[in-house]
Amino acid sequence: MSARPPAGRYLQLHLLVALLATTAILGKLISLSAPALVAWRTALAAPCGLLLAGWLFRRRVLPPPAQLLKVLGVGCIVGVHWMCFFGAIKLSNISICLAGMATVSFFTAFTEPLMERRRVRPLEVLLGMLVLLGILLIAGFERGRLAGLAVALLGAFLAAVFPVFNQHLVRREGMDPLVMVGWEMVGAWLVTMALLPVFDGPGAYAGMLAWQGLDWLWLLLLAWVCTVFAHAFHIHLLRHLSAYTGNLAMNFEPVYGIMAAALLFGEHHVLHPGFYAGASAILAANILHPLILGWLARRQRL
Image 1 (cartoon, rainbow, N blue to C red):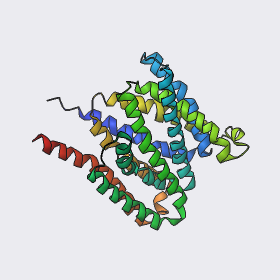
Image 2: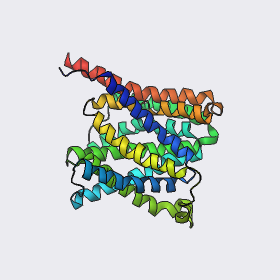
Image 3: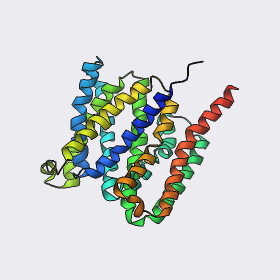
Image 4: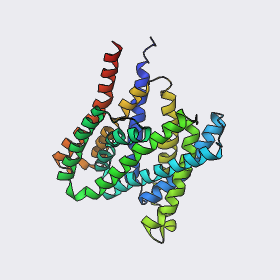
């Protein structure tokens, strides 16, 4: 039996999850529109990620043309997902956005079987119904923020799609995860720049330079720390911790984000108690999913 990872690894994992939760905080602080924000995030993260992969980890940075096109396509999905993520924050607030994004597991219960051509698991459907209950509760009590919730749900759906493609590229085609991140940032930047005038109007490209205050600092933290460093550190931790442990911890990202939004921006004063009931139902489904799967796996081994 393999040795149990030291407690320090679990602490590092939850610090990483807390770091990822600050993505929403930075999105609130940055004054730029959601598309402009994503354009800068990807423009700064792409060269940094590719440099990290090629120089520090000695990976082959340029994949074959067919793989390059695939990973750029996945990057386009990532770019639209991020525009939805930050757009939901701008339209509503951090808590509504994170509650909507926490429905990723519900959408994955259907997108993954469809794309991998396997049957839908009844357990995931039941937990998905619990997620739907949470969405209905939030929508019923936060009517003035339905646009933000809808955009967050679209972002969650896209977030349930691109990991399946990434899994295929890593497992079946043997692509390096860090190289994939770099090129996905390129694809995300391309689609964001193409859609920028659609969302922000004729002066969209000039608007990218309309930085205010500490926008430059928040963008650097978002691109280099919350994107490149966080992904590289996640890969490092998965060498010592199981994917199950990692996924379970990641389910706490909305919890940390909503807590931070309450402390920093006082969002708990403007949200109805029904929001917290709905958010709790969504988070419960996310936490119960890996716990029940782990319990079933242990029973089968007995």
